Image (cartoon, rainbow, N blue to C red):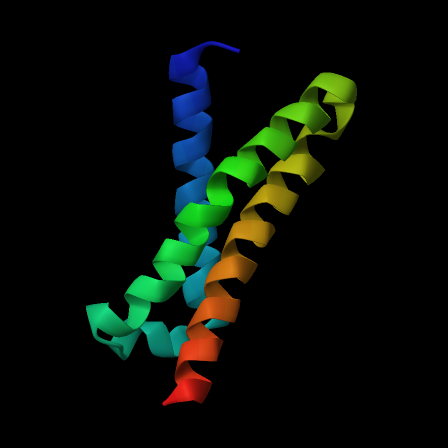
Length: 91
């Protein structure tokens, strides 16, 4: 896959994951940046592994592209949700 195409795909996944994260944790909209940052960092940390897994799925079974994309989005969003909720419970 071309680098530009991969970058575009990664950007689309990141945007969808962020929208999903906000949908699952609507209180994020009213939270200060410093409270949200650990969740965003968790999503960034998970992104490389998620993209590698997505590419593996696409190479092995290209017919499951849509479910693999959705899995990538949900996996990143869940990393953010988990980190955000852990930080909330620590306060």
